[in-house]
Structure formats: structure tokens, C-alpha cells
Amino acid sequence: MARISRRYPSPAKLMQEGNLLSLAITAKAEELAHLGFSTAKLQEQLKEIQELATRAAALQAEKQEVSRQLQQALGGASKLITVLQLGVKEHYGSEAERLVEFGIKPFRGVRRRQAPGVEPSSPAEEPGASASADE
Figure 1 (spheres, rainbow, N blue to C red):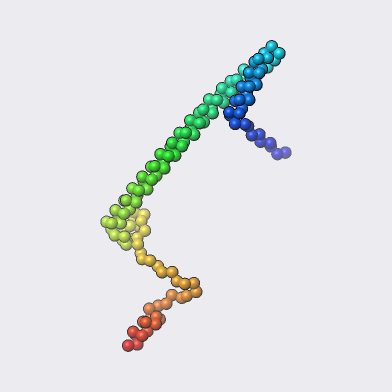
Figure 2 (cartoon, helix red, strand yellow):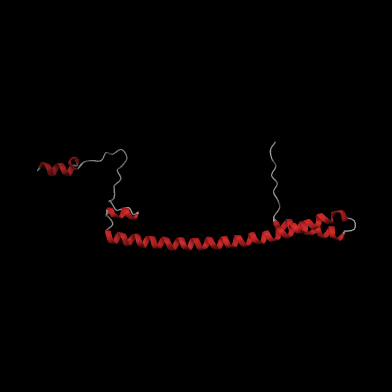
């Protein structure tokens, strides 16, 4: 048998509903005396819900503040990393293999893309190269 999951209303709606019910039962205390213990227990739980909702809101605000501070720290660190990497490249040169030690890829030239289906030609096979070789 499948387990039924019950969604509870928002804390504000539950507080409103609980307070209304508690006030109504308290107003009819003589008629509903047997519900006095449960009403007192409900009031305790409503107080706990209010405290937890306030705490959750404070934690949410703190989380947002920490996230903002984290983003600022990441931005600052990223800029410093870029400056340091440029300094290392300036010192050793952008093509130096020693850059690998610092986690930087050395510049090894630009590879030209070949058109699909075209074989790369060797210098001897180029039309200009054969004419100069014949002379």
C-alpha cells in the first residue's frame, strides 16, 4: 500500500487557524472543558512554531548574506589568480613549458582547421613548392 504524504499549510496559515480555534475554545471553556489540556498543548506548539519560523527566517537571511560574501570573495580571488598567472607568463614567457608547473598551458601556436574531407598537404606537394623545386 502506498504511503500518503500530507502537506502542511504554511506556518502563518497554521498559526492563524490555530489561534482562531484556541480563542474560540477558550471563549466556550465551560462547554468544552474537556478540551482544555489539548488547547494548552496547541498554544505551546503554536509558540514553538512561531519561534522556529522566526529562526528559519533569520537563518535564510544569514545564508543570503554569506552567499553574497562568498561571491565577493570568489570574484576577488579570481582576479588575483589572473594577475598572478599573467605575472608568471610575463616572467617565463607565454611559450615556456615551465608554465605547466603553475597550472598554465603554454602557447604552442594556433592549429589551422582543415576543411572536412581534405587531406593535409605536405610542403613538397604544394603547387608553389613544386614550381620552385623545378627551377
